[in-house]
Image 1 (tube, rainbow, N blue to C red):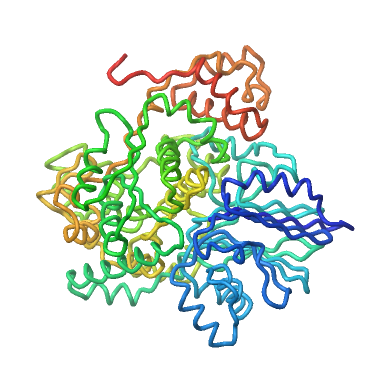
Image 2 (image 1 turned 90 degrees about the horizontal axis):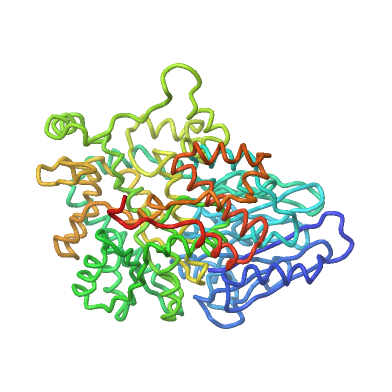
Length: 624
């Protein structure tokens, strides 16, 4: 909901320069257009820009101080169901001055300590808590990595921020060679550890960073996915009737939707037309009498607008539509890459960028989304190997070629290039930010046969990339995205559900991606209670965004290019690269150029758009 920033200058004898802080505030303004605040002291400064959703009064602006003036909090996020914690703290003598979740978090951190407080709260957050007496700072990020948090640590200073762009006044931003190499090898970008910028790191989900003025940062892990694992709970759920489990998941999801609708400002919802967002919308109408819903219509033969309109009619809601045309996938790159802060490969950034602008135009500040259902309930088509053996063999006999085997680990003899490529990204997409296999609880998890979000570093990585996409593209228009499927109790249950609650063989299910089995079974069973069959049984689909696959990039786009300069390529060698690069590599190079143009060189958006317009086209569907 906000933008946060802080700097500790270890050898300083005066406060950090105010003109640099004002520049930082300007760069964070889109994350918080409703207010801003600063605190400075010798060698210390904190900045905050506010998107006001709970307690709109200026009394809840940040940085926020406790009554004694010892502790200072800058916080980005939302706590759900914080009222119970507020009541408990009130019983301990806390005299609240606001009605915000910010003050509840501040007092919880003071009274319970950081670790206990974080295990008590449910929500999404990144924050910095400064102790003026000890001159110490602690940073934390939520366990799923919903809210971003970047840091820079060197002997002279420590900097943290919600976005790398906010750090620019304080350090030189240079490309990180290892991350660029990983990206060009096919990695879609880091969500933990080293970033695309040399010396800038991403705090991992659930991570803690502690630092004293004059010292160096100390890193630890407070919240993990492995702590959600309980083999006894898995065994208990497996023994229960499936109808009971459907009822319980429904009840938990309803509670999550209700709690995430809470705000003192207008809240709406994204409406993709898929089963996940449709179910969230249908549930939300039980608690919200005039919910505003928004759809990104990627125009073409695969448009999902008819499904979104059917849902709107079914619920009696007005649907606002943001049209997204082929050319938008090129023309919107300058703004999208600047807010994303990295070269991106996922074309769905563009529709989310467009529909978020529409949300803001309607005066709505936060939206519910259906994100994370696929990760929790096995909705991705490549999870087909999880089908029980007999069903899988039947599918193979009836539809050979539809189901893929295990992914290749190499190319026979010689070097395993996939493994070498993994070295440059720290195996993030394979293992994730926290190695569960080194944890005793994780060993119990694997032995128990529990299947779900906590069982795959790959799914965990995919989810984090989508959460970062939604955060940056929503915040580009000062919109907060909320994720009811990531309620802690709901995720905990989903991680322990029996496999047949997620994936089931069905002779009546037909989807080219996974024929004869029903994915997200328990979600679809719940959806039957809220949606017409055509919507509750819709197969898993992505945004129909194939425009990136149909781009044609002229060599002239790479004249005087960042790529040539960074890799030290002569004109002839650059021509050698472009003459042999296939389309996926050319496209990655184009996005890399766009990122360097906007995020490293800070060239104007209009200049990059003109360059793209002159050299990049999207070939119409059906054309050669």
